[in-house]
Image 1 (cartoon, chains in turn green, red):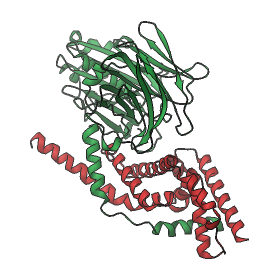
Image 2: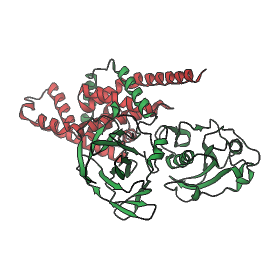
Image 3: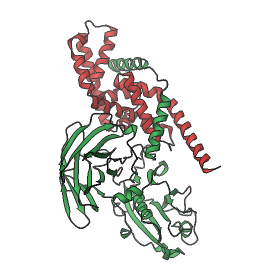
Image 4: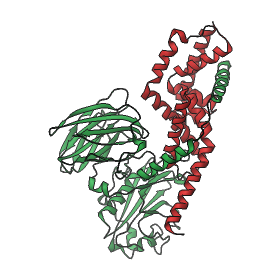
Length: 384
Length: 174
């Protein structure tokens, strides 16, 4: 250490002693933290909060790829989501005779974006762009305006934004370039009512950087709070509804290769099996007709599976040979997905009772879409 | 145990855990925020916000070490946000560059004042790198984790920061 380093070090230590140590802060921290937890009903501090204000309902998806499960709309804006920086109008225009303005500002929850439309407003915070994502999407509607409204942020790597509707129509979305105050660009689009499809964000070379599904509001409204489960031992973070349970032990105790990482289900999670050690046989056979189960296993060596899909669906899975082991195979949808993610290879088994609700089915795919795979060497607690 | 009392017990454990983490880290966090902002009130606000943010996220924390990393990272990020939002860096630099702010003579006290001013004028990430390396005594690797950049970037940030300080001190000392 040279002289200048010594002088800096000595100065910093002396200077730090000038700081008055806080008294009476803890009750405020606790009170605010409780409010935050009560309102968001989630353990994620980076959750996007959908707001219901003035007739606009919006909700966003968190952290993608892949998108994590959405958080249900809150009843009112929360103290911690109040603007803490000046609101900047980053875009404005007119739709169906109504004036809209897109406002951006910083808050406790990172960057926030509100859409003011016809006297109402709604939005979200914490898009995690440009950190982990290139696209942060909020989907909404407004009573009296027969449109699906999307707005949000894109990283500056994104050159084009297209809505690819399931009926084949493609809609170009204008990207609103912002000043240097925000390290992102913005967008707003007014789509046909009940639009179904995906939003694709592409780079200069036309490569799709991120693709998010437009999730319908009815599904979002039905969603309850999700649990964020950081599985340090497996360098994996899982998200699942509070009404689901994570198995406290491996449901495939005799399986060594691959290895079960996590199992999440709506029913009783009984470990073990009779004929097939590679699937959670007893848990599936204990199924109620409306139950569902997701089991994730990791293959010890990279198996060169296809890349993990952006979104999962029953049509993309294979019927496992081991379904022959299940006594209730005819009463369930049973699929296996093989994929690579982050240099690791996985098998995901999905079992859904034939009488499972649409919401439960949606949650199954939401769980698979949302878990985060981390580098095996990442520090503890870093898999978020 | 009824479900309500079970929930209460879990909530109680959660609060106790937050309290433990809070009291273990709050003083270091305030000192760090103070060095980054040079402002006592801002430091307290930032640390309060940081704990509120991390409370939910770390309810299931398994490693106290991880909390430490995240708390530092959050404090650094919030300090950076604050400067960006309020544009204090520009204002402060303008004030510091004003003629009346210049020291009249070189002495130990003025040397400290000079370091303080120069630190405040540094870009936020340079200042953060310096504080994390020389005050918190983190390794280059640990500093890179907090700043979410490469080790090479940390070396560059520290090198540029010390060069600026050296230049200022030499200039004032002559």
